[in-house]
Image (cartoon, rainbow, N blue to C red):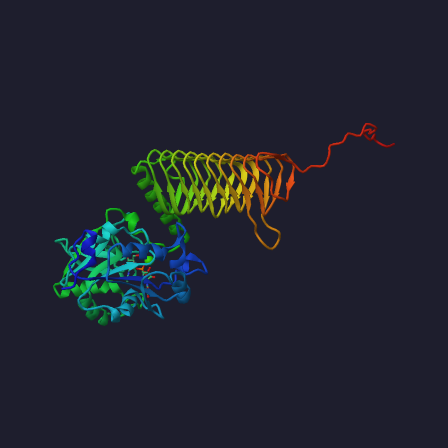
Length: 468
Ligand code: UD1
Ligand code: CA
């Protein structure tokens, strides 16, 4: 027998697992030029969420059946470790799965997922796989308040599943069944291959229905084991933008809940968006309308004010980010004070206790411990030592229209307000720059340097008076 990697993931896998994600549907109701499975959920394509969940199960392989918008889908997910199977014409879910079967071993279990059902959880799938085997089909079903549009699970008097009937083929009585087919199922490849070969399109939609394999399994006395999903949200499919928004809200709530349970204070769990990976220390507080993208790490006792966007950054213990900051690829040390209205463009590093205040833009710069730039300033390509004070309205003139150059400001320097530091230039340690200076040459340490025309007062001057 092969050794199954999934064993290491802590659940029992009776046979090697192959996952097939059906993603060839057109998604007409999205009314979009973008293929449905590329529509973004939390900033990433729907299909990418499903692939990521599939990978957590430790499968032998993941196949994606694609068709509509084909090349665009493959390009968008070129980095994904999956095998692609083209379904040139959309002839139904059974036909779609059949496109992937030639590359699947008879000895495998096949788990079918949908590219437009992105919230499905690893735990649910593990529970579905556990009782599967060479002589069983397991189905994920859902108890639905409104089952409109779903295939219905038809059970006999003893509660055993007999078959799945699609809504368009259902009798009035069958339509009253509230148990819907999620479409997610597990079946042994060997039998599946035989069943798929026998599917017929003699139904209301003229399609090859994957769901028809259930009646075939029953006829062959193969066990059909239904599992009712704990919550219907998890199996929500995306067919239009209303459902996309609902799925986004459910995703947001799921991420917020996990943060709350991990000890993070969220002022309003409905108003935080986590679009990537967020790691947070203890007793950190996040105010309303904060968006996290990419990989973000917040330390202990950090406070993030309202309306911040933080992407691919780290913020150290006890740092405070005031409202309305945009922070991208910054590594902010402990005990810093940022904003309000500060902007970090990639990529900057701040040591301990740095203050970057309102309307300050920082790009590709380093600020040493305890340095301050509190107002209306641009710091680009700057290497700033510790204990530096940058006055209001300072600009590092880093670009001559062709090349970028660095500004060095050494430890303990004081830059007077309204100074232009024309790079490349170095301000010596503990130097003071007089306000309003345009500095084009390196300045010595410990001295006052200023560049300023003399102030004059015109004694004979008179304020003009209104003519006529
Ligand atoms: C399907 C199920 C239905 C279930 C519902 C749940 C069948 C026959 N019906 O119906 O029982 O309640 O999903 O949402 O399986 N796809 C392809 N190629 C095709 C057709 C579909 O790849 O030729 C893909 C779609 O991209 C989608 C999935 O299969 O990811 C489901 O297709 P969809 O058309 O939405 O199926 P439903 O009619 O909703
Ligand atoms: Ca559907």
